[in-house]
Figure 1: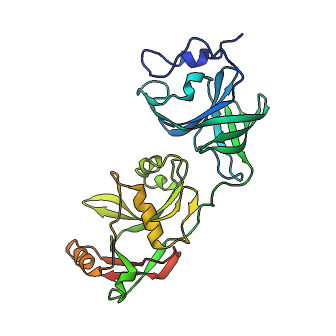
Figure 2: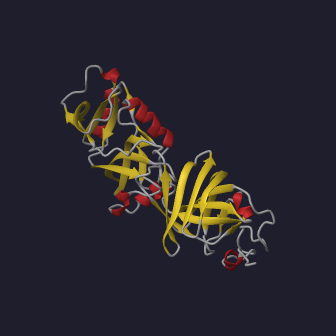
Length: 315
């Protein structure tokens, strides 16, 4: 009988990594457990591992499990892992194979509908991962994973930024608005999916922001501003969060969801917002040399393009 863990052990030194390095596979084959680990290695990915014949057959999935059957995700077949990996989490030292932080993203059981060298059909029963999937081999170790069945989330919104209309004075019904600084920068919508964002192509420092979301999908609205000589993304709205579109929700709901994310980092921050009293905000904008302030109706949905629900009041 071949040693199913030989390749696994050849890549690891038990004296240098906290990973389990057993001598032989488990002696009780035939189980139906699975684990998905979020792996912040050289590049963020998720490791899908299925118990089979005493080991965990494994694939690295860079963008995580697909939520929509219309989109397949790459799944790279890797070496079999020991059963002890079902619960493994921790820090693999830098310089070691797979160095980085690993956490258990989900675990549960699965059913096998088909298993061959080129195709694996399964039904996952986990807390976060559930449903029918098929893994199919394309070339070499490269496979694809496809969700079978309906999408499990709202589609990502494809919208233009909501834009304020200029007014000389604050609204008379100030209690119906929240007030924010106008930073004088460039608006930027940042979609985040699978720990990545296409906005990082122009602004590489956004990769760190995207990775911090893990598997959580979001669309952020912000303004690229230069503060203290450094470029900063000031985040002011949230259009999509964890599978749910928020564009039809009122500003208050979107704002609460944004604040719950607690987004503060080296190149990004959540914009402050003050409901009901424009005077101090406008005065502070003048003192800081900002172009003005924004008034946003508390009950307004997100409306692409110019909207009377958002007002720009110059300093």
